[in-house]
Length: 285
Image 1 (cartoon, rainbow, N blue to C red):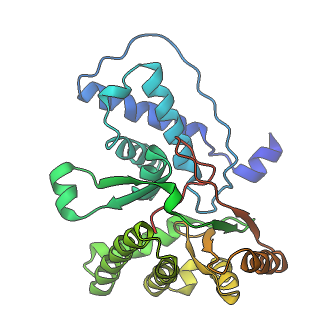
Image 2 (cartoon, rainbow, N blue to C red):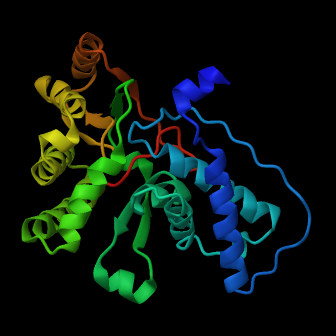
């Protein structure tokens, strides 16, 4: 127990399970969805590194929601587009600051293009989510550090500036959205040179918005390690891990592996599985 508390703290995944149970029950009550009686037990296990920008908390909530949908046999009554909102609501119950992207990726599985334009959000109450064939992706690798990062700090500064109407932040986020749109087109056309440029552009935009002090030296170094061998790199989310594309193939991957070993970072190939929980769930490009 002491070992677990030293590594994971006092507030682990059990509170996530309780939160999604509460949100799920209230949603069903508000929408006149009857739930049968009967008891159940929930437990979880995960191999997602903690606080490494890989959506570990939301993965637990997403898996628990899937269990509840099946236990109460109501999967057909709660639309797939709504489920990311339920997951996010459960995390908000606990004061976790986050967005919808990784929850959408986990609910849909595989590769998803997400359009969060105001038009869609106002009309539908959620984004427009388009699953894409994972075979469109080139080989990708994941770099992450053993020491954790706090994504909440990364989100908080920019969010407040957005709410305050900061023109630089608003225009930068619009450009991030256009990068995602261009990334979808590059994947469909299998223009991987363009994809590499867009990945680098995504990180550069994030860096200009958040600043080096907020992103942290370790997170920046993971990106720079990849760039020094000519690979394209960007955060998987808010920091803690980096997704990398080596356009020059296996020889460049070997260079990257050597560079990561020298820098003390972990590296592994990314496997995309179109199921509830991917081995690694990535957010939009």
